[in-house]
Amino acid sequence: MIPSFEIKIIKDNISKSELKVLAAAIFGDMVKGVVDIEKEVLALGGELHADSEAVLLDCGSKQQNLWGINIYPSLLRSEWIEFDSMINIRPAQNNRSRNVENEEIRNKIIEVVHKLIEVNDT
Image (tube, rainbow, N blue to C red):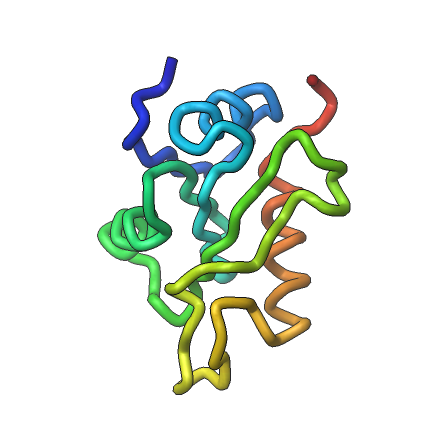
């Protein structure tokens, strides 16, 4: 069992079953994540998106490339990403809400998440 506050950095792949374990550790059906759209890495876990954001910043990521999401591993792949995080509020980047308003950035987030999370298991 993964400790409930551990942040896991995904650079290669994680299975859907591992993702479900991370989700169960804190929220049950959801895991918080932060995507670095430049480095194409994903930080998963923790109670707050800011926790994962801090870990990625410590690893050399740039804040303007980090976007917070929630992943619901039990949903269909087309529905499992929720673009809702306080770290997404960035008036300087024309993002004035908790959602990711820029479609190009949303698509990049989806691309990175789908690249890093294997869905061929249960």
